[in-house]
Length: 162
Image (cartoon, rainbow, N blue to C red; front, top):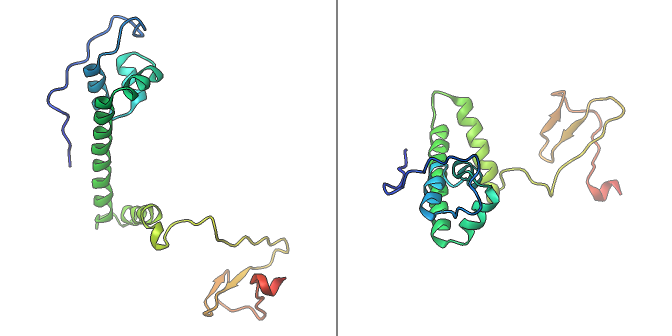
């Protein structure tokens, strides 16, 4: 998927200075061109215009027209990224790429379905004794260094530990 730049972008002028003087006002159409060339990245657009990112950001924030153009440029960049995500998810030739992207998608977009990392739950076990730690789930599934179930299973639910 490729996206096109607007056909009516004006060329950026060549500037004889390393930094645009504050006395030289910014031109909305030049700013628009710079914004599109870098897909909405204000810092990079400012470099093209030879101004500080603060100056360009303030100028853009005062212009609904430029804000809209910046958002469209970023939306098109997101469209391109989403195409890459889809291609990775359906890449039958590179299972590692497919698996990595599936984990990324589930961790970001699948959170509402229980995927991803949760900071509200977890287990933190400190084993200063050096022995093997084995976790046994309620269904009998064992997780640890050994496939054998330990002779003694300790219930560490909060009500049993207290």
